Image 1: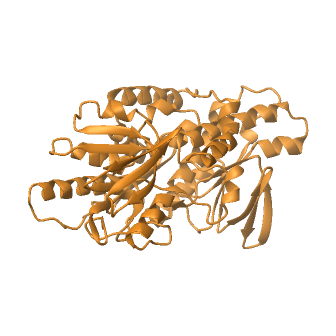
Image 2 (image 1 turned 180 degrees about the horizontal axis):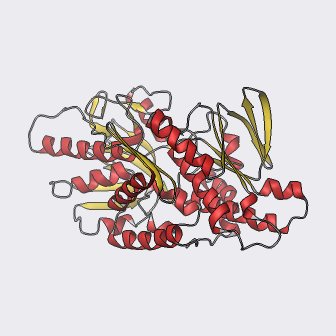
Amino acid sequence: MIVGAGFGGLFATKALKNAPVDVTLINGTAYHLFQPLLYQVATGILSEGEIAPPIREILKRQDNAKVLLGTVTEIDPEARTVTAVAPGTSYTVPYDSLIVAAGASQSYFGNDAFAEHAPGMKSIDDALELRGRIFGAFELAELETDPAAIERWLTFVVVGAGPTGVEMAGQIAELAHRHLPGQYRNIDPKHARIILIDALDTVLSSFGDHLSTKALRQLHTMGVEVELGTKVVDVDETGIEVETRNGRQRIESMTKIWAAGVAAPSLSTQLAKATGASTDRAGRLEVEPDCTVPGHPEIFAIGDMMSLNRLPGVAQVAIQSGRHAAGQIKKRLAGEATGQPFKYFDKGSMATISRFSAVASVGKLHFSGIVGWLMWLAVHLLYLVGFKNRVTAVLHWFVSFIGRGRSERVATFQQVFARRALQEYRQHLP
């Protein structure tokens, strides 16, 4: 049984392709989400289909894998069963070995009310809502006559200066300064303010001082206002309140984007209670060196679900831990010794800032500018699942990076306002 079809769950499933096992993969959606490119869906570069291929299509040639739609709500280690819910139904499935790879959720650091006015970016729904808010802000600014109202609509605040926040701020700046000018009559998109906020004193803090400085310089060149050492204390419909070294300030803005902080899903808490396992501050399960839950060698927690050796919550950790868990299961079936510790090979980190500009850290090597951007391009093409996805992504990148267009600017009222309806729907699930 594998819970979750993100990088960890999907690669674990594929690693078991030729093993003498029956694999049941349960996921809350029918697609595998390439989460690092969600910001490109939100800013109109890619369509959702290009970063979210159907799971059944990916695994159609893997005869030992069965895919079930559902959100897992309970794991019973004693009965060795998993209970999941789907629209209009619920079901329970038994397991012999279990790999839990349910990913991570957005963290508002105890201020969940911020989500209403500052959406995160963890799902296709989030990205499509943000696309509607971003492009809609320019449309509504065009209708205004009050300069203060126009300024509110043309002020975009991104909270969190990690890779997601930097990439999002960079793309909004490109929209405002390169792609949209000349398309409006009453406003000039070049007058838009893009403000990037973080409570830390650096951008891309995990990349080291050298690359952090280069990224900060590039953001400033693009016109992004970077406010570091700045803590968000309140968010409402028309603005955001921050605490700085100079005291409390308010930024008037209709479009706020939350890219700060992640937390383990509620399933992590449920499994911890059921097994007696400990969790870290983010709610992730503290696992044994081989990624198993203490006292339960048949249960593996991988990727963003696990807390092990301070490993970061990145795709490569999920991929490699998924393959490790699958390898342990195959060893057990072959009667070989198991319990080998998971060894993570750090392939580096990268973030794109603008077209032809990115930063990449690979071991002791650091790259930036066009070289970093070409590395970013190659890596993301490598891990985009499916030939069709790679081809269409390249075409849309060509349109956006070489030309001045955005291939996916369609946004609907449903995308922007459906969040509340979805919340009400989820409250009524069994």
